[in-house]
Length: 196
Image (cartoon, rainbow, N blue to C red; front, top):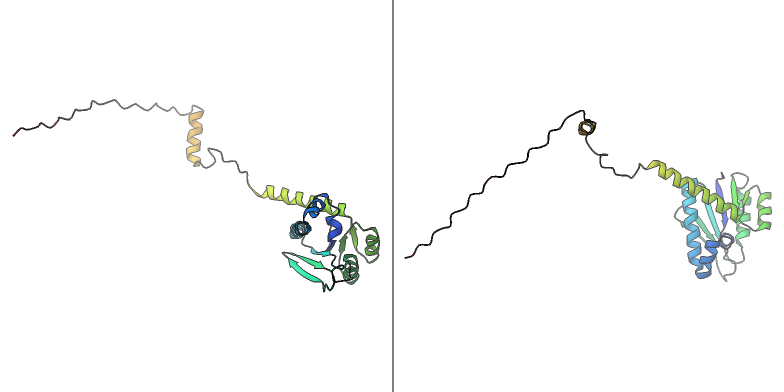
């Protein structure tokens, strides 16, 4: 997928992905953080602008909040504004000038954003896109690093390696080293004790 902006309906994705839903059942903040980390990694590779939107409309007096989380933007909508409304508004503003994709499984939202010129991704499509991207990252990483095997002769001087190869193939005869002959040890004379 090629886009300049990716808008993500945060809670919609969290509750559509089994791993994040399971985490949200225990701790919603942890699920949000995990999704943010996943999207940061994706953004770092794809280089598109990622805007993750969470509903804040049920919180009385909530003025909304815009945060920078590493390399992505995280939006908590203000009171009486849903994530869908925020996404529609932003898509309306930038959808004609930039390639915009919106990730949500909300069918009505998908129809609306298509009408505003954006591409749509269901939660499943986003999961697949991120999984494929992670596989690309992994493959490229493996191609960049040399083999980690450390063989005995990997760091041997080439001249020594050639000599050892000649010995191995019997091109050079190597004489057995002579064993040193044992020498007789002289006994030390014991000092005599003088009587006075």
